[in-house]
Amino acid sequence: MSMELTAEARKRLRSLGRTLSPAVQVGKSGLTEAVVRQVARAMAGRDLVKIKALDTCPDGVEDVAARLAVDLDAAVVATTGRTALLYRPNPDLPPEKRSLPPT
Image 1: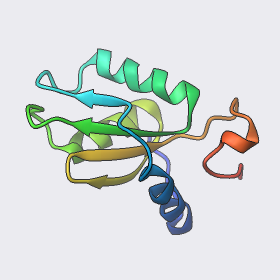
Image 2 (image 1 turned 90 degrees about the vertical axis):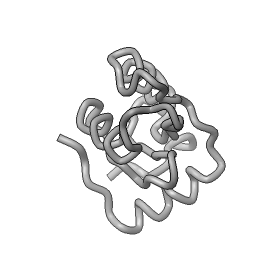
Image 3 (image 1 turned 30 degrees about the vertical axis):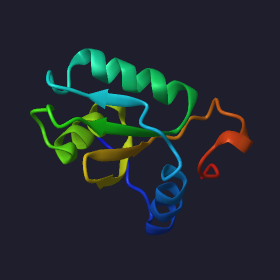
Image 4 (image 1 turned 90 degrees about the horizontal axis):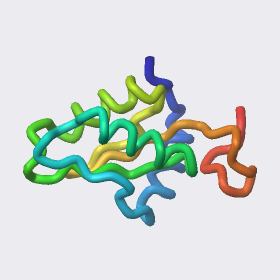
């Protein structure tokens, strides 16, 4: 089950996501277990991750983002073009590195 975000939280996360570089690229093999593990590792060190679906990716970016959100218990913040932004709170991060304050 993926988490829900308020409109205010989504707006803040989209703003923060603009400066991020894609942490993971999904290529011609689509969303494999290796890609899911790679996104999970990226989310271990931060709570906001940008994913890029390459032109060769057989799935649309919305499908990739939705499946990752379910698999990783994250929220899809936005999808723009071939890029998706995912958020999952990480309580292990120090407060100054968190994208959103704890609720």
